[in-house]
Image: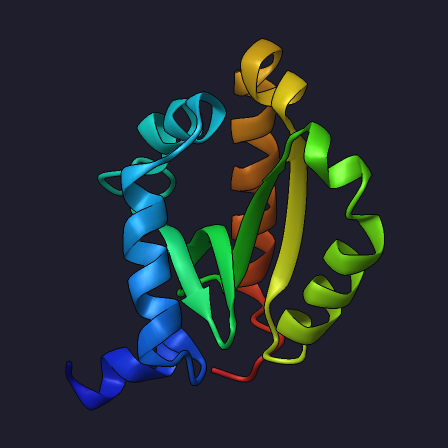
Length: 132
């Protein structure tokens, strides 16, 4: 791995990288649906990664150019609110912004979801808060 490439993993260890690789093979239906709309630089020509390691965590989707994590919250996240909140705070320390969508939004309002993602990406790219 090139030195430049290592920076987008924010100190993720080998175990986290391997877990992310396994999760890419087991994506949920909602993750697959959103992935179809994100992959191949379909959003403003930027690359999104699926099941991407950030330190000890794994984000559903990540765009390094915009330092943006996209999470899809299924029913289990209702029970994990405090964990998710702490995880989000830890990842935000790297200058990464989180946006969350529910399974319902992905399944029933995918065009609205994509427009929200585009808006946030535009804001992040036009005025990066991490000083690039």
